[in-house]
Image (tube, rainbow, N blue to C red):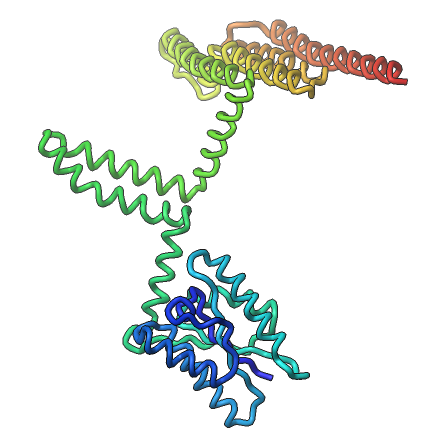
Length: 366
């Protein structure tokens, strides 16, 4: 059996005529269509009912076993409307006295009503969807619905409207800036903002920035020490960069004729910055260790990080000074040995401490 389903998602039929739905049978649907036409002859859902009757007559003349029904949702939320349509379809299917498999042809007046298709498909197989629109306004409702959906989506709305808003603000800002005597600054600022926004959207940086902000906010409320130590580490990194550039200028100033090679330039920057970089790394690692301890996830091996950073910094500092010719090869060898021994000693010491602590805890629990 073929079931012709006339779908009115926002229940114009019930709200404007008072007819209870679902409406099943050709005569009942025709009567509802006439009453609906009397109440509001301009409503597009009226065409859906008459198209359903027309399709019923065609299939009936072709010898098909066919039935027609009109189902409605509710005004407002699309999700609630889809559920209401599903309930009415269950009622229609329960009332069909036939032993044949039921298949459906859906009749709608636009893309919005077609959002209920998955709900119908979950209950009955669908042979086709027929959209009915007034010829003079073909695709108008679909275009309106598509624009409405785009503007309701926060991500799409931001992608389209923010650049458009910046572009529309360029002219009034330019007029104001021209009045104040600084026209060039406005165009540069507006184009810069637009470029930054488009670049961030293209690279997907928006989610990353939102994630950093959320983590920072949760860290502040949770009282995490890493928030403070990361800020201090950032300042130390900035100081280290400045110190490295200052060391580079000092090395260049000490040269009379020979030019400074790329390797020597890198060595000079590292020699001047490495102790600040090491301080930043130790500060941030100690903050992380403190947070792990407060959260009850502390492990002795976490204390390896400051010693590793100190060992690596010592090795880099010695190599940099050796490249610049300021220390001897024996000093470099001694620092490499000291850095290696420091890393091995810290690893072994904290591993032993962790094993003994776990053994003591297991014996106490036993």
